[in-house]
Length: 245
Image 1 (spheres, rainbow, N blue to C red):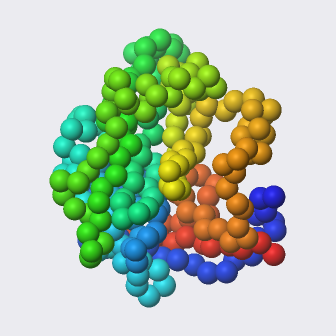
Image 2: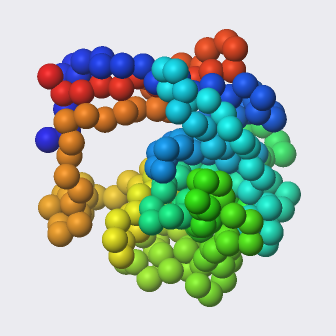
């Protein structure tokens, strides 16, 4: 059973120092994913087209290098943010995933609703990059699903009877919105903010053969409203780690 916040106690604070990062306000103000592996912490934000590598430092992690997404995925559609929402490290590769969501166009007239949606293929990244012996990502090793059309993640999800009817909706209207990613041997698991489907189906999924074990310790880090992550002065972000009582 997942513990509630009332059942958790603070165990430590972890600081992420981004001093020297480009467009630093967007980076630390929109952190959307953290992955730790191989002695490094990797972070992504849902604004811009970069990802960051941080090394262990006193009290947490400090920025080592910031990377441009387009240097590793040159075919990623241009013109908009990549809306990266999740990152993981598995078997010597860094995995990155965008939201894959659609958004409704802004209405020209106040009080009206535009019936058209923006597809935003720049948000359709699901791919990985090989990490070298030093832990740095290696250029020329980026692999990704097609961003649109046959073989793309959105096209594959159309084969899922539980998700297919929601794929043409904007994310804020119960459409597809990927917010999490984790890798297991021969498995890639996606965490969805949307769509929200019937609770009966969700229960069957939790009881299924791919249920993940719940640990007694977890680290929560988010800059969304109501979270337990704070942006501090001097280009740092602090995350609070909690454990079950």
